[in-house]
Structure formats: C-alpha cells, structure tokens
Amino acid sequence: MQFIDLKTQYHALKTEIDANIRAVLDSAQFIGGPYVKELERQLAEFTGRKHCITCANGTDALQLAYMVAGVGPGDAVFCPDMTFISSTEPAKMFGAASVFCDITPDTYCLCPESLERQIQAVRAEGKLTPKAVVAVDILGNPCDYDAIGAICEKYGLFLIEDAAQSFGASYHGKRAGAFGHIATTSFFPAKPLGCYGDGGAVFTDDDQAADLIRSLCVHGKGPGGKYDNIRVGMNSRLDHIQAAVLLPKLKALGDYEMDARQQVARRYSDAFAGRFVTPFVAEGCVSAWAQYALLAEDPAQRDAIVAHLDAAGIPNMIYYPKPQHALPVFRDEPHYGETFQNADDYCARTFSLPMHPYLEEAEQRKVIDAVLEVL
Image (tube, rainbow, N blue to C red; front, side, top):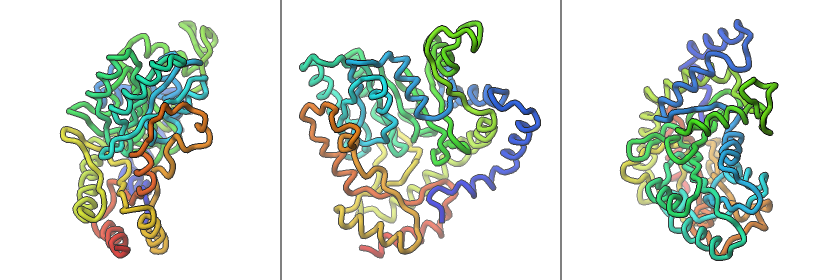
C-alpha cells in the first residue's frame, strides 16, 4: 500500500507522459522549451491569474515572492505556526524576523485574530516593520482570504499565498493560487500536482512583478538576456522534462482527480465521524486534500494508532510533529506573548492516513478497519 500512489497515477497517464518525455529527449532541449511555455499558460488559466512563472522548486517560489515584497533586515513576516519551514525560511535568509501566529482550531490555517494581535504587538513595540503575511493553505485547505486580505489591506502588508498543498482547491469560487499579491506552489512529487523531481511556480496579476520574477529566476537578467545582468538574482528554472510530465497531470487533476479526492475524503470522514476530530472544510470552500489528517483524543492514543498501523504495514505520517515556534532554528524569534495553543494541540494529536485519488474503496477499508481496531 502506498501513502501517495504515484505508481498507479503514472500507469493511468503513462501514454501521455511517455510521449511527452520522448519528445523532450528527441528535441534535446532540456532548459526552457515549448512544454514550459505551454504549462505556464495553462497554469495561469487554471488559477485565473494573469501571469505564471515556473521555477526550480516551491521553496524558490517563496523566496522569489519575498524578494518581490522587498523583505529584509528589520522587517517582520507573519505566518502560521503550523506549517513546513519553507514557508518562513526566506525571512531568516534575508535577515527578517518570522512572527508566528496561531492556527484556527477547525481548518488549521492561519488564524486571522491571532494574525491581527501579532501585527498590533509588533507595531506597539516599534522595533520591527510589519512587511508581509504568508498565508499557508495547509493540508490542501484554503485560508480565510476575506478576513486575512482585509487585515493585510488595513495594515498595508504584502500578502503571499503559499498554495503548495492546495493546488486544485478553491475558496468561494476562486482556485488556490489566485489570492494575494503573489501566490506560490510546489510541484514536489507528493503534492496534489507533482512532477518527477522538484519544481515550483509563482502567480501574480502584476505585470511589473512578473517581469521582476522572470529576471530574478535567471541571475537577474535584463532586456539583453542572461548576460545583461541588472540585479542579483538566482538560478531557478523548471526543467523542460518536468513540464512535459506536469501537463498531463494538470489535465487529470482538473478532469477527475479532484473529484476522486473528495470521494476518498468522504469515505474517511463517514467512517471516523464521532470517533476522532475529522477535517473541517468551510462553506464555499473545496480542499485539495493533500493530506487526510485526523486528531486523536490525546498523544497516547495517537501513538498507539501509529504503532498499530506500522505493525500492519499501513503507511502513515504526522504533518507536522512540531509547530514552528518549537523548532531550534526559530528559538530566538519574537513571540509577543502569543501562546499558540491550537498549533501545539494539533501537533500533539495529529496523524495522517493514505490519501490520493487512486485509493480503491477496498484498500481504504483496510486502513479504516486498522485504525478502528485500536479503539
């Protein structure tokens, strides 16, 4: 059994993927190329954005967003306490402070009330300049962009949507990737839209930001090309062969995989309702179900379930075992008295089960039965 079954997905799309890969090999055009341009066009259309710029990975996509926002020493970047480190890693790289905010107790996304408290605390202290907010669509569930967007507008903050886990999800009729000044995503193989290596993309409606990102991706190139360097940039491009893989996967995601993900999630939620805290998706929202995470009664029950699943050979994961404020690398970041109660509670009780659009009902029943055996 696979936690995320990339093998079955490949066999379902083998004809298209193999043909595209052969075309890349025959062309011997491995950097740039027509598949990259077509993928960027389709991704922009899929999200409803004006511009999509692909890059080497999701972390680079976030770093590019931070660079466009002008994050630097003395700035404060606000983000949820429960996420992967890449969401805030660039802040530390650029000399800014990561100011963590608690998550909501239901969606596990950035809590707007905690965000505003932290912004006000930073402003009151006067040592840091509030600069940007990184809203992470955790586990595939979109953030409350009405509330978060209003807060960013109120305090003049640059909003970045981290849609690495939510590509394909939607919030009030708009797809993930459509929010914020800039949105980013990751094509890491395990993501809802993943390639066969590393890859990422940046989305924006701002023409100047798009031009800047394209320059930054290729060593700060100017109008004269890669040898006309007008700024310090980076080397971050999506390989042609990865774009060739992603094109049929993007079609499958829109045609049937998102629907299949909803079916798998419903079967889990129906089986576990009343026994665990099951995932909550707000009205008007659709989750991409990057993961299906349950909350056990307490850490002891979670550990017993994980041990039982391991013994039965059923793959499982914990996303994530520690909140950001508890990581050694962020030990000295300012907290301003925020307790992170929801993030701490989530990390102590969460566990995730196999989740992908090719999970057959009979196989899923084995997972469900194994979890319930512990109860």
